[in-house]
Length: 429
Ligand SMILES: *Cc1c(COP(=O)(O)O)cnc(C)c1O
Image (cartoon, rainbow, N blue to C red):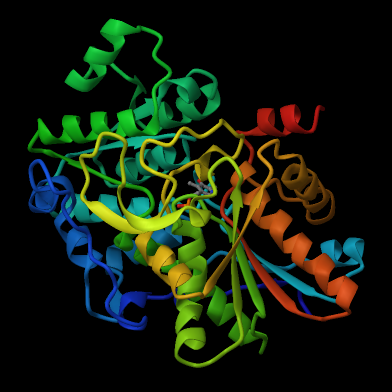
């Protein structure tokens, strides 16, 4: 048996999968808060038209435009599925481990899958500039890349505390032609008000979102892009799970457990959603486990309506949330630090289909597990992806105790070439 399972470029999926057509209804829609202006009526001015349409689409399969398939191919899709034989041997587990290689990405993460789609639609709709926020930096880099390939300008508001130390990633964004500002910045009213009080304000994702929104609203040629949480983002990411499903079909195998890390839910959703109807409708016994940090265990929060941003500019979404003003301690897997989980994954959890585990915020357990993965399989995962690996290894060790040869599939959402400082600090190298 070969340890790499892959598809040919001509076998790349040509449609995304819309899980909303296969889950029990009613799926709770977004709603407006009781006071203030209608956020829902403002959405067409905020989001790309096609993305807004996809947000509540009732079609099961949505065509990926031909030009976008070309871009996916240029970005190296389809991505391989590997059998982690060396890791299995090191663990001496009867479990069979498989991992999807989203780290084979031009910018380092799965986020290019939706960045390319959003930039493509924005260009089709006549926009010339994309604005966004970024926290850990992976989303900003992915959007800068997509904008560059599609000949669009890109403006990124990056949480100042992270902007200041991730110089390599900052230069990568600039190399791709993006304008990058530490947030709060002097480019917007929101930012100027904050830096007039404190020129060294560390910023937050909520503030950066407000800056991105304000910037795009003031320029008719600009539109705002979001990198996770929303239904259309998860839809674009289903390319991951669709490929994975075909790869398992090729070897006549089906997973017993699927694992990935979860911040807002886009890589986890993209990985598992194409398998969800088999469980919800087909009665398959497949477990889905979301690996989180105790710094932001949003799936263990409350299931209720909440805002997606700190400044309450977005509609309210029904989701598992820690509260949109919750303070979360810093971790190296910064991409997992978000207060809420995507409405689709939240709903599936509410219905009892999603399990979750939250690892201690000192991150020693996850980074030690990642070290074993690096030493056996040889790939360097992003700090966020280390959570996925830790969870897969923990499950493989449970299989060892019970003598069970389960098939465990895990997604590796990104590489860690720009996050070595994280490994260095946590593992005291
Ligand atoms: C952004 C990011 C995550 C977390 O976001 P999700 O939307 O939950 O996927 C995980 N891994 C990597 C590499 C990321 O860049």
